[in-house]
Length: 148
Image 1 (cartoon, helix red, strand yellow):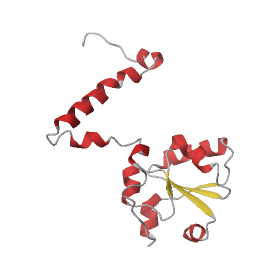
Image 2: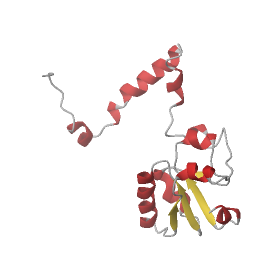
Image 3: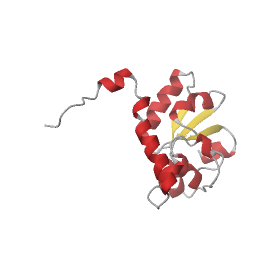
């Protein structure tokens, strides 16, 4: 795959956590989520390689791509760990993806235990607001009543 990447014969999409991508990723790869992967990869006219953190998520993402008409898809077996074990380089990008795209990471959560009262309040507001995001079907799966 390194040769294909160097010769621009493939597009590499990293499906790991955004903060993991920022720390280290395959040079020339793009960070994506399963939700937006089909839109990101649809513009590609070449082989798509998925870098998984979780092979099951990557397999589901591959199915999503097939259903969207992207048929030339491969998984990087072993993910970034296999890439680095094979001696290939990685790069870091402290600001890529940008904070606004890091939908898998709550920046304010990490300061809540460090005496940061505003971060604590923001976290609690976020957590209690989760209930409002449930639809009727979600709510029906909960039973509220006296403990037995």
